[in-house]
Image (cartoon, rainbow, N blue to C red; front, side, top):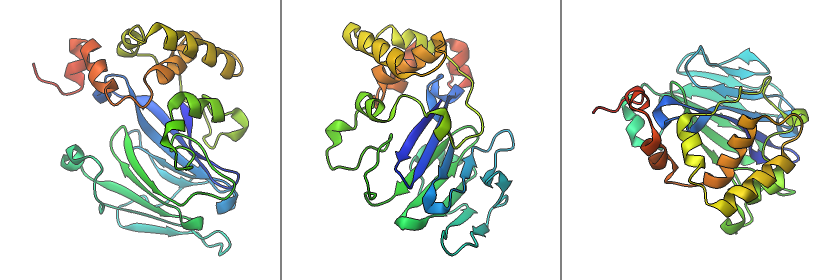
Length: 247
């Protein structure tokens, strides 16, 4: 689904997360969008490479090829976007793939680097604490990591982006994998009950079973570094083969 990465009165950074065969159905970043008054309410969007994924400004494709640069012409909202193959990879395992690295330099000293792979992306954000405060999956930048847990972030900004705040044109279709379903059964009873109650209260509009389970999964296992390992234990042989594992 769609989540806040950085939420501020002037700066909006949002991500779309989807399961992949390489993560046994667990979500990985699929798209990222930047908007807000600090760039004149334009929208910069970066997609993964598959399905003719693009880099766009307000829906218009830019930087289609490696070694290309886009410079925004309005001096009141200066920003640049570069796509090349230069950058330090956050995951050395990706060094075997062709690199498509997007460097985005934004006002307010914000810099983002997006590593575009076939069906997921890695990204880094460099920034100072924003005037008026901020929140999202990157935390609230108050120097106290203990209040940046998934449940507390969801409590502050909601479990999904509200329709009127979406930078993306469409919502991602709901998806629920076998591995996620099996993992959810392992969530301890109190956390499970709390997650169910929170998700029913926080999700606005029509609530499907898949939406409820996705939200509960995030609250049970969000920020859990062992989630991928756990998902593998529930993976079918077909899923393992699709992920590139050999017997």
